[in-house]
Image: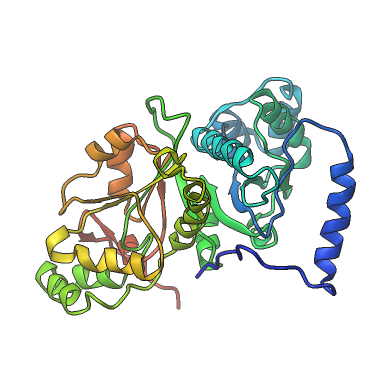
Length: 360
């Protein structure tokens, strides 16, 4: 699964990559600008977003699907001075920028910041409209990857990505298989979200944790699951696909805590799980403790719908592995992201989905 970038990996004298970066940064720093500098990738928490999550490109996508690539590119070039409308990831990106602003005030020289990368299979000709839209909204996005129709997944590791957000479920699945935290975002009509605090909510099993316990529920039922969790209460769960992203958030949270800003921290995390607290909650909390991770709020719902609580939390993003939870959250105005991982992909509302026959 994913790995967290080192907090303080000291460069060695014979490190060619370090010397190249230092030389490039020296030239870049010599140029006068009021724009914030992108952080060094190995220290940053890198968030890669697709153009269709950052901006609302439904109309443009329809042109591509109905009229083909050439008409799509021509339309984008013709309208490159017209800013694209904000998309589902837009509030999340704005919240990341707010955290960076707070961090820069506390740590002016720190490289431990969010770094937002636009990762898209758009052609370079479309890049002008994307750049104009980013500048129109004053977004701090300096790194682009435009792959001209090819999948950008192969570049995610090169960009040292901590989280990849897309509207293409196949690309997200491919990223997770490569060990990169990723999720498919879905558009929804949402209420105004906090502009001063980044709020990130996670499901537990098959998101932060592996699906090992969920397999027992699906195959043997709740009573066996409760017995299993009690028996293995002190054995940490294996990590899931989003564990490293929570770890990266925790790394930045601790920078605020070190400045006595815990009660005014601009990052808040939530665990929103269908588990029961008394019957199966202890293992979850002990697993987080064994990882050295904190969660700000832990909500055990014992099978109750998640939508109403998420509506109160108003997260900038909520991660879940099961589509019926995503749909329920979306219906109540929560920006949700599906993590296509684990046994839950074979079930819908507790019922096994008929799987297509394997080709011989």
